[in-house]
Amino acid sequence: MAGSRDDRRGPVAPRTALVFASIGFGALLIFGLGITSLLTSSDVIAVPGLGELPGVLSVAGAVAAFAGTLWAGIRRDRPSYWTALWTAAATFLAYLLCAGIGALFAGHGITTGLAVVGQLATRWFGLVVVGTALVAAWGGIALVRTRSRRPRWPWEGEDEE
Image 1 (cartoon, helix red, strand yellow):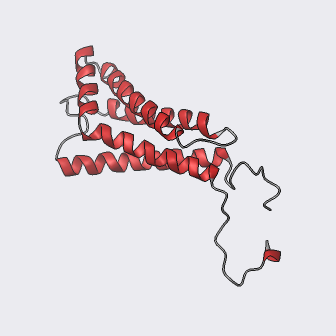
Image 2 (cartoon, rainbow, N blue to C red):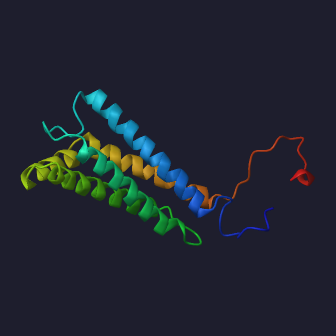
């Protein structure tokens, strides 16, 4: 029923929108990084002998930062689409930070960690992270803000809800 929910919010609860947006972000991020690697014929992290740890930590940190920042924005009464910009910025910074920390945990020095962060920040992969976070955050905010209902066939009546 339309009157049973808060009129300032859409039909999707903020927690549900957060789950959908975060899962969508993670999937799009992995897909986007893979396609970008394929198109540019380069590795996401092009440091020999580093292993998988920096990549795993950077994606996990990016998803965590995405979810935390988006949650801070969509739990309000009327979430703003500007939250998508803050979410993208926090996600990008967390991605870089976690990649550098991953390089340190992989047994390489701080110089290698800074080189990984510099590569990710200045190549296409950083743009993929920012773009994916913007799209997924906008989608999560739209789920909470939109006041539309499900599609209906012309013959469905109001009494059938």
